[in-house]
Amino acid sequence: MGEIQRPGALYQQVAAEIRSGIAAGEYKPGAPLPSEAQLIERYKVSRPTVRKAIAALRAEGLIEVIHGKGSYVRALPAPAVTIARTITRSGKTFRTGHQAWQQVEEPAIYRTSTTAATGPLLGLGEGEALFGVDRLLTDPETGTRAAHRVLIPFATAADEAEQLGEAPDTEPEEIYAVLTAAGHKLTWQETVSARMPLPDERATLQVPDATPIMLTARVTLGNDDRPLILEELRASADRAQLAYRITADSPRQLHAV
Image: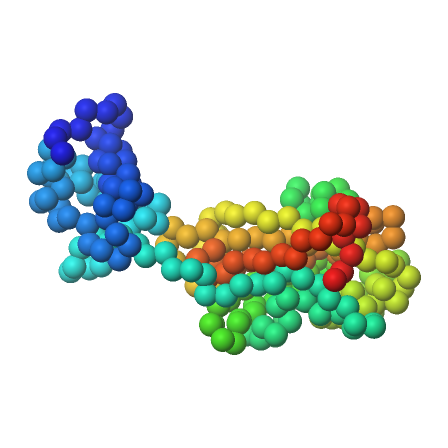
């Protein structure tokens, strides 16, 4: 390949060429990239340009640099674990798809308030009082970690179930049972998004460099579609994938299966 002619910063051009080579299979997952000297010769650029291109691709998560060995195309294995995003009910007992996961440590209980992100999901404005409960979970078979958070509005605890005010760390499955016993016919709405992790999330969830996390937000709805609690689940996108059971129910009739 001759000298690069495309517009833009030289290192971006080099990175684009290597990225295209990875996408086309020229550079296989787990295989080494050409050496710096070979890339300099191939693309007719300087050593600093090649190094900036490699740094950009590393930041994107496409390659990894092994000290003393060089740059390698990052292998992207299938996620280690599939999390079933289901809720099942047998009589008065509820179960979730990650119920078999183990708690790494005792739940952290605190008081917080709604934000611009959590308020609309709960049908509340910003600054409304909440109980928060954080749990760090691990899959016993793969060691995959997930952070689970429950946000309980003070209004839910006061109006629907005093038990939640006295013991906010009640397990989610038991919360469903408590709310059902209070007379609610429960339904659930869930959204899934992805973003880059915050520093504490990266450390807690053991997320590799340049890897996003998946964030699910599940709202438990009671009678008249009133939001009662919000649950968030975060996991590294390279370790976990989500599975859903899809039925022909209308969007307003998403009952537990």
